[in-house]
Length: 105
Image (cartoon, rainbow, N blue to C red; front, top):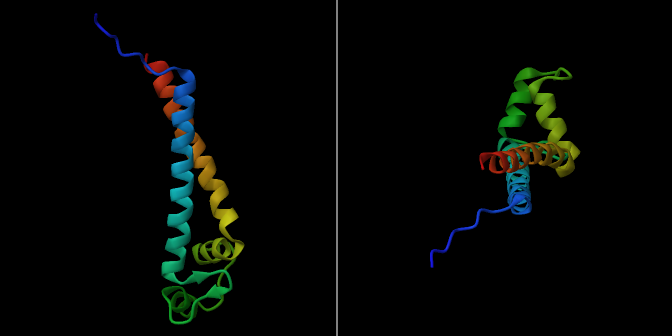
């Protein structure tokens, strides 16, 4: 007898899309937090002797809305501020995967 390979159904695709969402969100959060820490942005301000401290010293007064202010604000706000956009991006990628698998049939 010839056994046909059954294609995954819609709910299986949803499950796989959820995994992708989690992986993208988790990875994006960790990489962003680690990247900010590497450059010297911390929850209490720029770390002494870091690239962030050198940049702040060279700029002087940091303008609101500048890239430096955005990076420092994100580092000071905590992991939730980073995780929420990462979950959104992960959801878009995961749902795109589900749509692709569903309509590929």
